[in-house]
Amino acid sequence: MGPIWSSYYGDCRALLFMVDASNPTQLSASCAQLLGLLSAEPLADAPVLILFNKTDLSCYMTVEEMKSLIRLPDIIACATQTITVADVSARTGTGLAAVLQWLQDTHGAGR
Image (cartoon, rainbow, N blue to C red; front, side, top):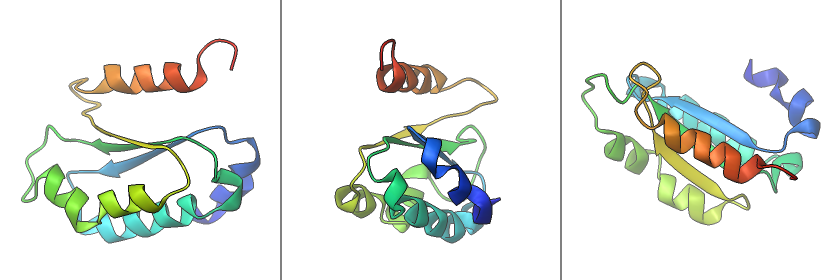
């Protein structure tokens, strides 16, 4: 679906980007997609929430190691957007309250 995302940028007020934390072999592809989104001019001011999902599943890498591997601190420092990161498990609900709070803070009443 990545190749058609740009057709939706015009109406985008925020970006939620999900990384499958149970599949570190896809990290490089996820990082490339994220960098493409962050460099898109129509998204230059859109707040971004990066979700590391499936953190409840065992993996040979920790989420912190994944963040370091894709140099997430450097990406955040260089991005024009405000970026928030959350570790979540859609299956157990862990971290979802923080996602809902981010959505409310970003798109609360009257915005």
